Each structure stands twice: as C-alpha cells, then as structure tokens.
Image 1: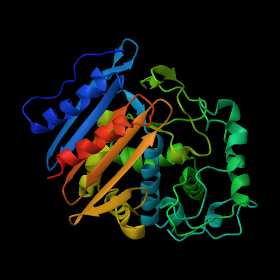
Image 2: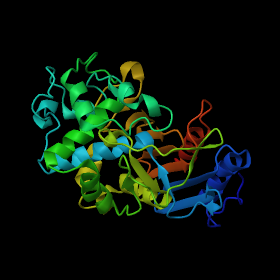
Image 3: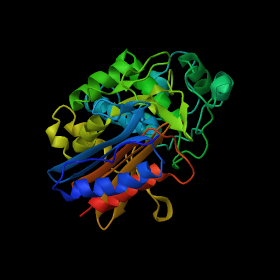
Image 4: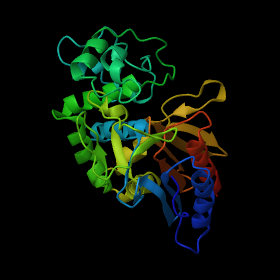
Length: 346
C-alpha cells in the first residue's frame, strides 16, 4: 500500500525535518500511514501522511492506538487526583481494592506509577483468560474479577527497583476509578482528556467499535484492534495526531492548562534514582538528564500500531510519531521518533 508524498506547511525548518523523517518510512513501505509532529518554543508542525486504511488517507481525525503510551495518561490522572486530595501517592493499593482483593504486601500507588512496586510485567492469570486471542486481542477478556484475583495473591519481588509492569499501571487505572467511584474511561475523559482539549481521543472498551480509527497492520496484514477491560489504564487509549500534539504542548507549557498545571508539573518530576547512571522514572515517563536538561519519553505498541513521544521541558522542545503498523525488531517508527526528538533539541 503506497500513498502520496508527505506534505507539511512550507517555510519552516520543522516541516522539512518532518518530511525527511517520514519519507523513507512511507517509501520503503515500513508504515502505511503516520502522524508526526515537532514543537520548539512557540513553533509547532504536524505532518499527516499515507493511508489510514484501504482507500482512506490519514486525516486530522484519524485515530491511532497509543498502546503503552496510555500509561503516561494514567500517571497524569494519578497526579491530578493527588492534587485534589482524592488519593495520596503513598496510599496502599489495599485502600482502593474491594474486600478480599488486597494482598499482604503494602504496595503504593506511587510505586505502581513508577514501576517500582515489584509487580511482574503481566498478571499471572492473563494468559489463561486471553489464550484464544493472545496474538489478536489479548487483553479484551481480562475482567476486573481476574485482576482482583491476581492482586489478592500478589507477592512482589525486588520492590524499589524499576521493573516495567503493564500489570501495575493497569491496576493503577482501576484503583483510581474505584477511588472516584466511576469507570476508567469516564474518569480519564473528565479529568484529563477534556481539560487538554483532546476531543478525538477515546478509551477502547472490550466490545467498542472505533469510528475514525486507522486500520492497524502487522507485517503488511491488517490486525485486529486491541481493546481492554480491567487493564485499560495500561494501553486502551486511541488518539489523533492533532490531539497528541495538544498533549505534547501541554507537557511543554503546563501553565496553559490551568486545570492540570500542577498535575502536569508533578508528573514530570524525577521519582527514582537511575541505577549505575541509567535512566530514571518520573510519573509514567522515562527520564534522563543530559547536559543539565531533563529528557522525558515513552513508547507504545500494539499488534497494529506504534507510538512515541519525547520532550524536554527546559529546552521547550519535543517530538511525536504515530503509525498504523505494529512494532518490529528494527523499530523503524520509534527510531524515527528518536531522530526527530534529537533534531528538534536546541
């Protein structure tokens, strides 16, 4: 599947940088379609190119799956609720679990948001629930009662060390919804997406159709959309290029979103120490300091989509890329996103 050459508004170095990064991805058929953006100071540029689906070009309303990039939204939701006093970073997860679901260990909400609670990458009972759809849609049948069953038997290992956990952030989303006495999609929409002006963004429920979503591809073949139930906070968000640009701009200019200024700022603060000079964790974001500047980033992927966002608050610059192709070993989309981020840093 090939499409027209990428286009962007002429006259800025940002548009040329975007076009140069997108062209090989499209020309070599590494991705069918994409949205890529750059922001630096008061400048911003967004490029939309290629095919969203057979016979349909990528447009401003085309939705892409964020996969694990959703985790940064759940972490921001935690910061927003903590600012309002609805939850505390040091709350034990037991405080927001139903009776009978609390483990013996006192893992905290902050540990879930920074991957330091000692939880495994995935719940131990996930495969049993999703075995039939493991390659097509593995999280759809994983229900709240399954999550609570796994959590009641939780035995954390190596607490305090960063151990990436989809289980942990999915559980965090569920606990925040419990604290607010609502469901995760409603809570995220009201507390985060709406204040950010992200009107094209939606949380994919277990049986939800996604109008406007691109078709995802895996090695050139159409892939089923991933949808979520209990672990929605770890990967269920779909968004458009313009909406993700709004998210990036909010990270660079928190003061422009009064309702979330304090939460956005809190989410970017370092929360862990890097082991042996390695990367650190903010709330949901990977963090590294280079030449006195904090660089924050996260990637995401499902079977049919790849996403990347990186930014530096001190530099006032950042980059994003969304593509409707699943991650592969060479990681062409993520590598393109990293190149864009390096290129936009002053």
